[in-house]
Length: 115
Ligand code: 5GP
Ligand code: ZN
Image 1 (tube, rainbow, N blue to C red):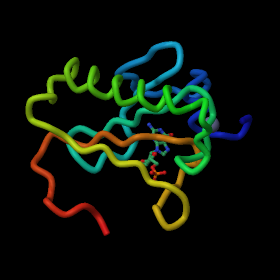
Image 2: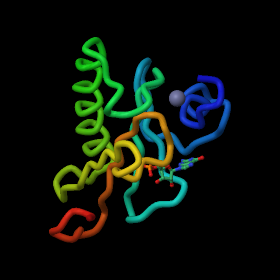
Image 3: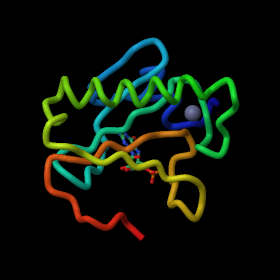
């Protein structure tokens, strides 16, 4: 996807503050954090949204959660806990159309998820 912002970040064409990377997953700090910890985790492969996951992507999605667990350990917030949010489509408030997982933490979050 030539015009996709997160594809460009995945390829290193746009700089980001990386916190984790392997051959298929990249995690980097959100440019506009809403909490002390706000990391975005993306597949390097372009997947538009959760609604676009194919059967063949399902194991990759599992490995993204594995990467999130690793990141929480490496970055030292595993014990304190955190929240993972995936916005999907128009009603979900998705602005960047490349699947991404928000890791939010570093403070006590509200008990209600955003409505
Ligand atoms: P969405 O609303 O699509 O779930 O979240 C998109 C997220 O991407 C937002 O939290 C926004 O701050 C972040 N973002 C947008 N552009 C950039 C960028 O160029 N670099 C980084 N690191 N984050 C970005
Ligand atoms: Zn993309």
